[in-house]
Length: 109
Ligand SMILES: [Zn+2]
Figure 1: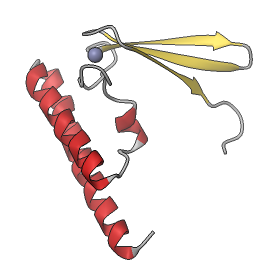
Figure 2: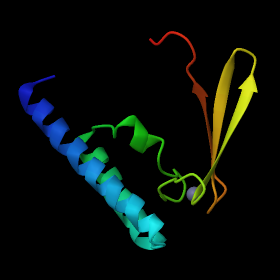
Figure 3: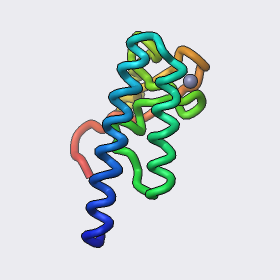
């Protein structure tokens, strides 16, 4: 990665982090409309710069309705055990969208 690209990435991530925090706060205040707006701006930064948001952001909003997912507020989190691994099922309480992902147990790649 070039130096210029690195700086761009740092900037983009800083902005996305900031916007995510704002969005999160808005949800807690009950302003879902503005919270979605911040997520949309965040995603636009990601698209324009072609830089992926950090993982906690990628997993922290609803892909369908763009609301930040806060357990107990806008999302429900369930853990399913399945064989060797466990998976987390996150449900958006506003639109019903579900996301499943594995919890890595043991060694990391
Ligand atoms: Zn949703």
